[in-house]
Length: 220
Image 1 (cartoon, rainbow, N blue to C red):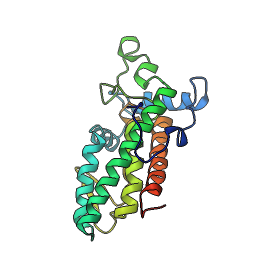
Image 2 (image 1 turned 60 degrees about the horizontal axis):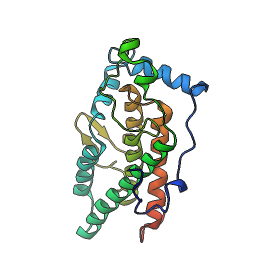
Image 3 (image 1 turned 90 degrees about the horizontal axis):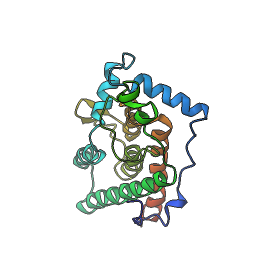
Image 4 (image 1 turned 90 degrees about the vertical axis):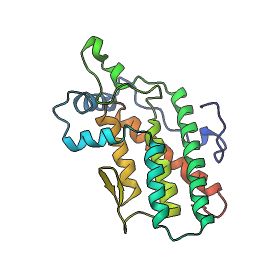
């Protein structure tokens, strides 16, 4: 996917994230310690709500946001044309975000937490949500998707504050809540370092702002 051309982004380099901290950096040690403690399958520090969040976000982002978008369209006072445009823009922008995310992952390869911590063969550590996906550690592609979707849905559908958005066991009144929760889920599920998850969300937002600015009538 990193070799694909984005639809609305001239080049992935225009929105590329800064390199992540290396293993010698204090932030890396901090992130790794957090995942070791909260992201382990047998963690006693992770709360029941944190476990619920991690398991909820173990499903694909597309599945979550398909349900969320349908709910938003139901409550939205808009024409058929506007509804179709919203869905179209959402898919185009989030696809661009994934393409840009893969490109960044190829430039900055990093070990997943499980490998960085030695895995079960060396020290018995396993993530809450196995197996680790064959996707970049940096940036987290799921939060990249969420950051992009957040900007598009906020711009075209507004926040679901009047009628709270219910997705399974979770309830939201702001698209930013989904993104923030997805960032946490990557850590609590043992799949990503927090820096990688946060960088993905920021990257997705940048892609979306740039994409919307190129989409006729929706400059931001």
